[in-house]
Length: 248
Image (cartoon, rainbow, N blue to C red):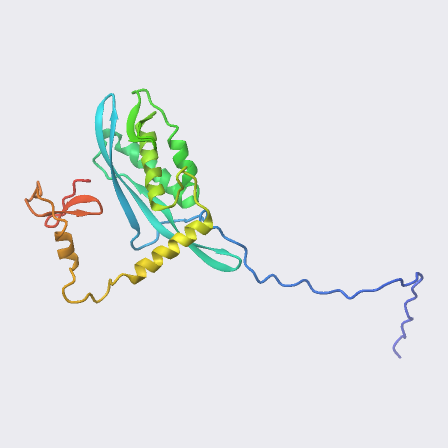
């Protein structure tokens, strides 16, 4: 026969009781700020970009430079809902502009691009503006009062010019501060609605095709290499025949 267990004896008085409840499941995923979300590598496909031409003046003379800033769409999450912004992710200076110094310019732009994909491009640009050199000051740009600006180096002047482009694009405010997530998300939503409304597919009869649209921006001087037709492409004079570009 099975042994009968004796009932458990409770020596103390029971003064209260409660039922253990299971912890509620947390179905809401954590927030992810798209401004600081790390982008491991450049995705395939095309990004929108701006190409800027600047003229720097120093004791060694005047130097003309072009730089390119690429913008990508980055999506995060807030309160369980996706939220997307347009963010600068790539910085590039075309080759052939700075002779022997180009390797250092390329290295700096690569580092700046890594900072942009890491989510701290504003701080990186601020640090570049502090760079100084022993060749004297560099003049570029004007203050809000109209006075010429003096920078401690060409690197600092280029960084300032890049900040100005980010202000024009709406990523920074007038004081060089990164805009709030709400402002950036609202701006991207407006851009998205504008782009979606563009009649890019199946143009109506009479609408200019890509080649004829470029021809509308044809430059008077022919290509210096093949004497072909020059047009403005991404802000650079480019030959339609041989592909020559004055930006390098």
